[in-house]
Amino acid sequence: MGNRQPEPFSSRGPFDLANQNAYFGGWPRLRDDSAIVIAFPVEGWEASTAVLVREVGVERLTFAVFGARGHEERAREQALATLSLDVDAVEWPEVGRRDERIGALQERYGFLRPVLFHSPYEAAANFIIGHRISMKQSRAIRTRMAEEIGASIEVDGQTFAAFPDPRRLLKLSEFPGLNAKKIERLHGVADAALSGILDRRRLRAMRMDAALQALRTIDGIGPFFASGILNRGAGVVDDITDDDLTKYAVQVAYELEEAPSQADTLRIAENWRPFRMWAEVLLHVWLRREVGLPGRAGRRP
Image (tube, rainbow, N blue to C red; front, side):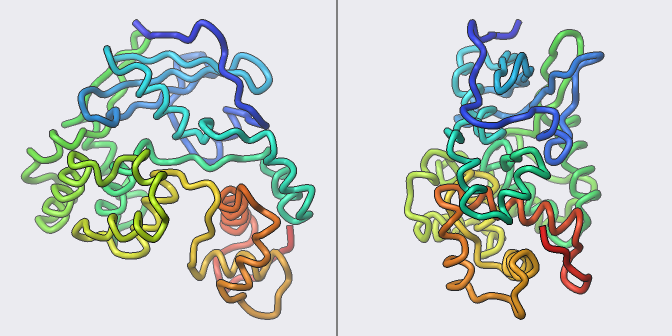
């Protein structure tokens, strides 16, 4: 049975579950139902869960937790974080009023919030699995791992598979599509999760430079992956990444003659506070869907 909230949860700012799922999640739905199901191992690693999320009104949602007896609240918190619903976003539209380009993207994409990996642990595992293979191949491997060695949770007669928790991952000795080096590095990710290095709350509470340094102690995690784990796994809200793709997006959106320096990017992003990462994500969505990666002509939002 699911542990349902007695009262709907307020998203505290614009939010559309179907819109979020269309752009980011791709989560399964229940049969003939608009609700989505998010399955994952619960941080603390004592249980796995499937969380049924249903929109019940404008900016109102309910959550039902399955398969995590004794860990329901932690599972619910993790589902909220995955959807960036643990952030008070009442002031998110204000960013668009200060910056017309971001405002245009907010309107175009329905005030999208970033959707995160279920945990920094799953983010790290994803980066290791996906190294030097296509996103499609990586997704297929993760799906098979969930189905074959992850926990299965039943929700209203349907079964959903969660990615294997760290203890299960440590028992993995071989798997189709993964070479011995990736298996070894996945074991390192599992150890880091069990030791607390990949704990979401811990990473969010640390200074950014310290968090990135801690993440880079994991074998196979370099600067780019560490940034991805912190921003897409832990879910830092007010940060700007130092990467070429973000600079290119800013160059095209703001019609600059050349790619800005990081200092120039930070100056432009001052108007995005305290949601700089959310604005950056919007720029990335626009770039990939409507403009194209570097080498193709850009179009101003």
